[in-house]
Image 1: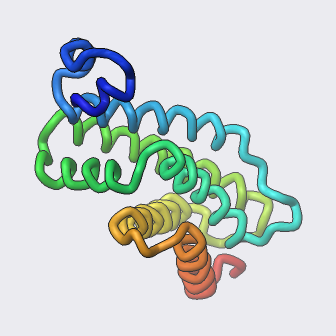
Image 2 (image 1 turned 90 degrees about the vertical axis):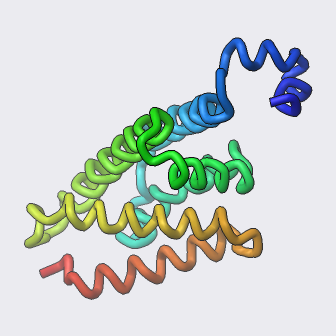
Length: 173
């Protein structure tokens, strides 16, 4: 908190006036990034020439890139460890609510993206969206955990996995 106060050029007690705990401060930071990313998501329009995998990957990469531009990997590791250490806390409840919003945004995006295509699994799209989103989330945690991984590695892994998944579930049938 003292380092934050120094960077903000305020006293440590002033920081505590606004945020009683580090977790409250972390949540405020995550909320800010979440709201900024949602604005980008709402404006996202896939390239007409992009394939399904590229379009889905590009959508999810908005979250990855904005998250890492705004919050360091070290801080994201603290966020993730807080989720593990304090499972019933207000922090986790609020963080999980954000994740639910993100999943909902992704489900809507996926439905709209695939709506123009002939697909025989429309009723399963929410399940597929949740599966893809949870996989992206796990890859994001891996990216945050391993300093040697680059965003490019992350994007490649996601695209490879999406390609395999889409081929497996035969979305075109």
